[in-house]
Image 1 (cartoon, rainbow, N blue to C red):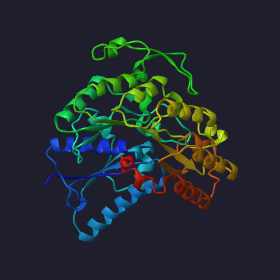
Image 2 (cartoon, rainbow, N blue to C red):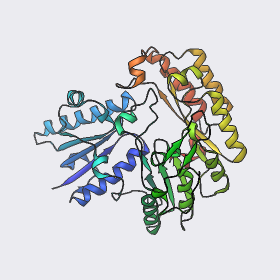
Image 3 (cartoon, rainbow, N blue to C red):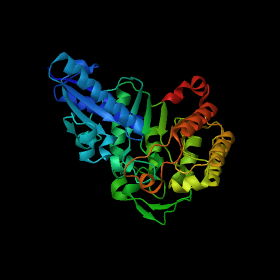
Image 4 (cartoon, rainbow, N blue to C red):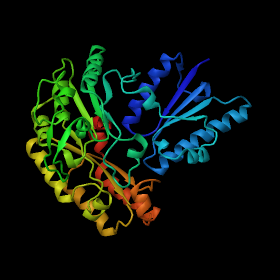
Length: 384
């Protein structure tokens, strides 16, 4: 029988990718099953942001191998996709020698494949893939490639279809949602450090389905067009980066009640030196200025963030600076991670991993407790 099992590791983007993979394989005649022991095809959609995520993939494959070897029956075909593909094929075969195929299913399937979703009220909608930021610690640009924005008309069509099926809430997904559409624009004098870039819209790209023109950032245009759709009650988005969090975006959230008041704004560190080594493109002062600007315009805003502890060379004083920053901002959720060296990244090549695992764990525990204690129980919607 053509049964297919899909295992997903990692972020919301991977979950959305797996929903499209499920629809694709069902259209190919496969029956989706929730137990790999009953499957003839096993798809493993991987995360590689941390070594621990890769270790979980390796562990799963070994468990599958051991199970079928013990049963003395032929093992299902295993296909590995997702962010672990940043590794060279030779390395993939070394760490996962029994995998039958390594392939970029996202590239094969594309944005517009139907999705099979478990939730019937809320849906993930990818608006872009890849990333152009090249933070020094991050493997995503190597795993997912350059940033490519999905045409706005396709996003609107998917949202309209979801609403016709009874969906009421959507989350827009991208490595940096507020840079949506910039790969389709002519950029003039764009600078980092939260300055307001001047953009000229590619009218051939937008004019057919967006009536506005001028210098409105494409992501703001997308939010405005989605908000016109009847039946759509709530729009979430993640993840946003500080360096191009537009003034127009702040203004739109302030007046548009369909947009959720939760903003996930990754900071990563409270040390300017570490931020520079991370190639984040802003300072702590920049970040705080932006937060203050958002709070002034949107008094009921709720912030979440991402933070890495134990980045190469991080001192106790620099970790304390991160705690000081966290204490200035009432984050309601923080995804705190221990630094993990990723082969191929700038940080892996340039900096020794010189903060001990014990120190990383201690810092992680302390910061996670400060930010996340009881917060998820108070605001369960943040689990989105």
